[in-house]
Length: 76
Image 1 (cartoon, one colour):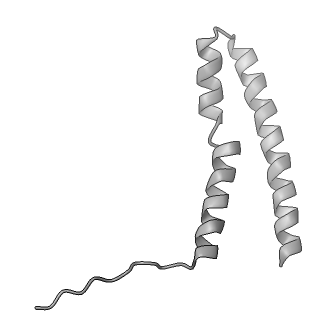
Image 2 (cartoon, rainbow, N blue to C red; image 1 turned 90 degrees about the vertical axis):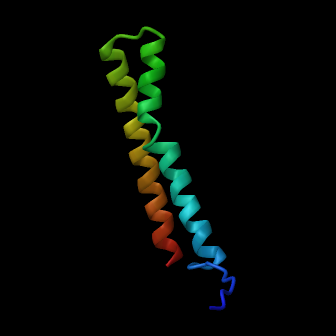
């Protein structure tokens, strides 16, 4: 049996960059809610303050995603 080393690259560099960009966008917007809530709990904030901060974050995220989708639509 002869084993050959193969290079596993299912996507081109550009595709990997798009995947990374989407992941970064997720981390910057959606993935931070838990971290925000945890930080505010550690600061001793009330539940209503935490809810308000997360709602503000969600609204900013929604606006950012809508703007991003608008730019994405212009690329095509």
